[in-house]
Image (cartoon, rainbow, N blue to C red; front, top):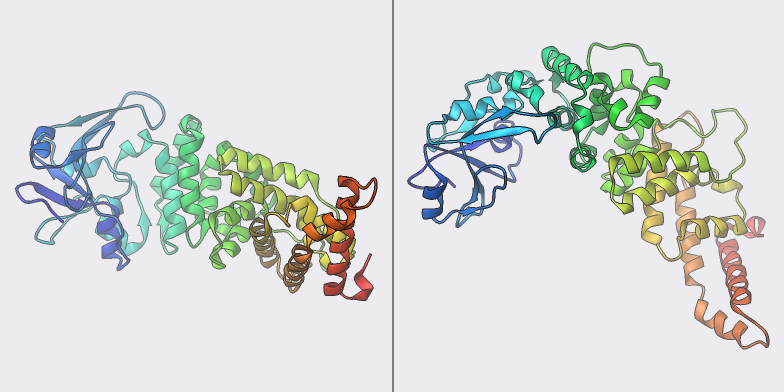
Length: 419
């Protein structure tokens, strides 16, 4: 909703998505030829910390004064912003990252496109507007994220070379982890997160941000590709793409990322390894989640899924006592929702390694039934019964509860799978 009495233009992602025929969720506006004082007089509420941004008094949409930026230091904070009535719309659009994000819609519906965004939108190209792109390393992450969102888009060769130059100059090292997580989290929630990983790997940013994942990409020894969005050349993203295809939530996708590259537990035709927890995989998953500054839920899922994936993919080899031990390691009795997330992450890994080794198949369903049976055991009744015995303490109660859960799971798994 444009504000009367102001020279306003709808800008950025809302214009881009409308032209693509996609739903528009958030609208941003640029105001040309006015001052902060005038905005306040019209009832707009100032909210910008680094430059003048205001909330519309009715719609609460964001209205920013047209501005230019001048680089003064490294990283994405090293800018001096100029907001003045004489700053033009074209100058404001020129400072934006990609041409497809540098279009505006006037009040009469006409599109203002001074930098070729419409052409690149039609051709499916992610192209930087100007050399000022290199002044903000966050833009590397944004290009990678847009590659994950728009599957038919490729990165313009000149933009990709600029990204590589930025990485070599150390610009990515100036990013704070929280900002990296913000962009990576959004990319993980897109339809093809693997394309984000491929772009970050190809330009060298992944090696700086998450070297554990970059090492996996190098280990894949995929052929060289001129296309930075080539996921086959990167060798990363099969697991997280499977999680995306299943519409899994963000914590599960973080765990799926820690399970890359989705290699099978054992190659087809080879004997399976002993179904025991994998401490090395858990440590690697912990490092990945910590580097990304993922929230605790995602970190916990990543660690547990990596540690237990080998066990979960060989559930048929476990007896009831080993299943109870698995539940205890995962704290599944107290946190069944988290254990469900672990199963989903490992199922994504199984899907990624399809036809190359063991899969969860129906094992996850049996585990869910087993967990329901174990949680149905009346711990209070067992505590009252065992606790009434002379000399019985917490250890005795705990052992009795464990035996009862083993017996309950044995019923689910069948008599030949008991302790």
